[in-house]
Image 1 (cartoon, rainbow, N blue to C red):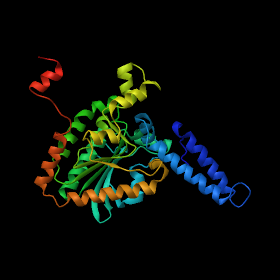
Image 2 (cartoon, rainbow, N blue to C red):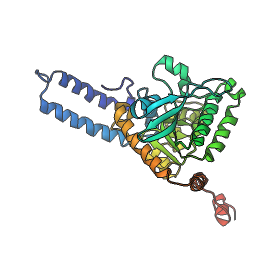
Image 3 (spheres, one colour):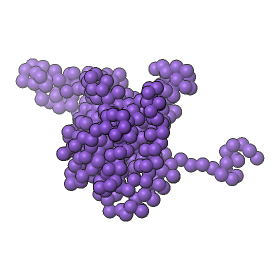
Image 4 (cartoon, rainbow, N blue to C red):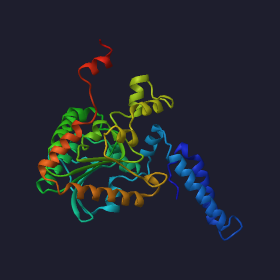
Length: 331
């Protein structure tokens, strides 16, 4: 069944899907033959491939925010077993935007940590649309330390527009807790795997985003700021004209970040996006996660931590000496 939330650039796809649905409903009647149905299916596949292989950065953002896109708890049901959720931060309370718990992935016991936005209005309100509070990051770090104690690999699934922007969150030390997570994750003595499964917004994503492997789903984004926020700063207003310009300038898509060396892998999505086939997407994600765990587990802790440190040290570049002077226009 086509997704409920129809994206504007997919109008041709929806027309073919609606036509195919009518033909299949009347396959035994005068509405359509089996040959006609096969032809429409081929056209639909080709059209999806054409559109989704040429998405603009802003269209990628829209796909990453699709309301039917699988979230952390959907993956828990599809590929993780024996999930035992761990609640609370031992200080303030339990943040439902960040879910943590023990789980089993194939043959491996892991600690799973991931953002949850929610699908229904009630769940989205409970989860603050995936925007975690300070207690969420404190809870995540508490459970990461627990995983390190038992040498359990940590899997972080990132899907947030950013940390919760409220005054109360700032009063309770939001920025400091995210910074603490960055420091502590850089030296935790256990493998850490981070995957951006939807939105990867600002410090809210970075708070669980330091790992030995950092990957993104094909149609997700990872950025220091949202396109709307960037457009508001640069042009003072976020409109249908300025938001695509900001998305383009931010170089926030998986292809851009792979080329820049920020991420390790781009995990392919089903044709037409992860929201069209949750099970297929989950199986692909499981394949990558299991492969990463098998690569990282044999490494000694010294080698693991040294490689993690170098991984983040080499992101970006700077110039010095004559090169820097030339770039700055100084003779």
